[in-house]
Length: 468
Image: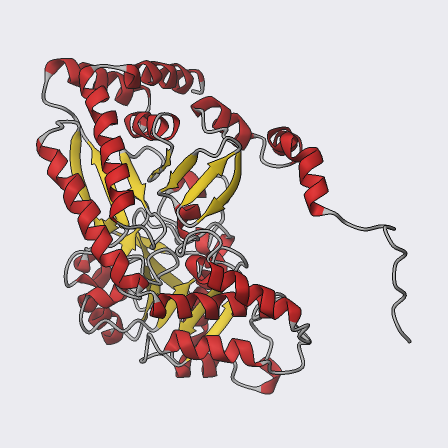
């Protein structure tokens, strides 16, 4: 029996026609049917742009103006947008008409992608594929608890590991946790505080410590030697080390994984996602040691004890394989290291010129620009007004003109933080560094001269006070 062919023109779906007819309703559709606060926020700060297409590290509007992307979709677009190798891989896998997600076979693509990933972590043995970073973290938390037989996970203050209930339990920001209790009985320790870690481990109920080698919120790096010393403490107490590399992994910090910056660090579980997708198909992965996986999947009765409906789908696996191929062939991690050092050094040199610029830090193409209280009386007064209204407003004052005047998209690193985080596509080079530094310098000149930046600041203060 064959499937009947539809009559020509009958019931056809035309995506291009749909977008042409209704694409202009984008903000109204979101306001009516999705998170209504998103379009409200974008309208308020002037981020309600209409981007028609994207390529590499740039967006383009209907008039052909280019916008430099220094955000990379929160790190998803590690290779930029629409990399031709990843596009071709997806066309190829669709054209192959594979028998995907049968659930009762062992297709080759997941095994091949796992093999490639594990080659970058030779001390690890097995991979579970899910669909996102938070799923990768959820899997690591479950595996650590089951493998150790202990209930409690330690995490670092100000950490971000995702927003589903398990990962939210190890989220170090109260703003995300408020209103969602009860959560799992996990405990925060300060990043870098080995004494606090040892105190908690002595209680005997800790399954693991989960840590971002470079925290996304504020771009704070684990102190030198901390990961190695924490690993030794954990092993002494028969607990595990989980490295959350969802944002820092796949070349972002200049090595394949950020934990590799410190010799001798071998996490028991590693979480990756974001850039592995190539920006197309959601994918997350939990890598771990053989004994952990064999304990979780201890018998045929437990073969599906942890699974994901769309995990290991052919499109995601093809995208991941293409991404890793591009990373090797185009030396993506090396470019991130070299370009990141150039960008960071040029920005750090500006701290001598601008008293509002307090610090520039980070690794590779994960850079934090922190603002702080100025010395001069006039600037200090303006700074104090902003801080009294809401901490983080000055950073937002810088982000907005970068987009509106210089067509550069950036983000504030976290709520109530005077930090801008730069996580551009890993393919950028000196041209993009020049463009960003020139634009940032112009905005900082304006801020120190009392120009239009402060006019927008007054608007933000009114909104902040009205929202209380």
